[in-house]
Length: 300
Image (cartoon, rainbow, N blue to C red; front, side, top):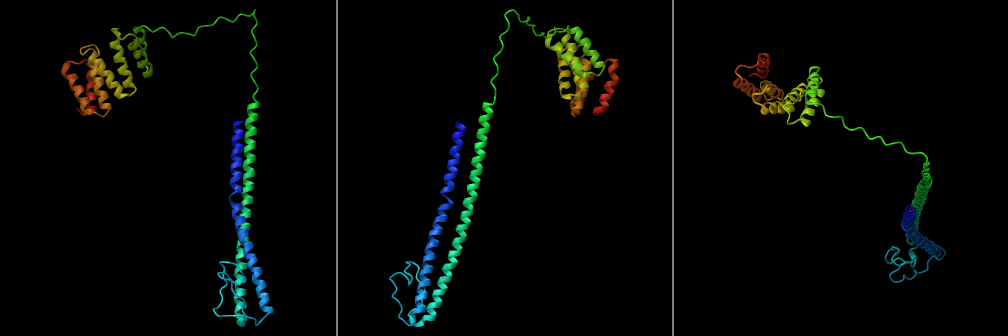
């Protein structure tokens, strides 16, 4: 009902604006046209009298007016002219009549134009009101057409509900040794996402375990395999920081050097490689070829 009231109020406001706008102008122009028409009739009457009574003296002009008796619209006459100069006065009257007729035609054109505007506005207003009523009827019909949901059927007292099955809980965490074994197998298959998941599993559930050191290095290897050089550099540095002389210390420094070079920071990569050579004068044999390749790649 609130929508219907708002719609009717809008329609009334639009109709009031249409009724008080252009028709007032048309009525004002019509009054002016009637006044001009009356002046034309008076001019024609005076002209007829002039033609029927030649030679008579000029009629007196009312103060502030004209021969037509219309205040504010004096007929321009030649000073000192009387009815003795009937030809000049006739010409002036004819010119005045022509000018007034032209004004009447102009006003009639304006009245016709305003009438067309009022008619078009009325048609537009009728269409808008019709559309508004249609939308309100559609809205009310949509609300009324929604069927109420049937009440739930009461369960039979004899039928007992089935026992609720608890949702499955999270799987028990893997033993760190098992997770590391599976992670290394994934790394060998180049399944870097699986290796990363296994390493993070160990670090999340066994942070204080001795296996956390191996998991940290596995995480660094998995990130390097995915060429995530920024995260790999952090993981390698964490591995080296956990145990500077641990079993993965040399591999961690070499991996840190490769990750920094991969990031484009060859200077820092060469510094990490130099640290490896300084702290481990006798590197592992399996790392020597990798160190040579890293030195060449970084231009160290």
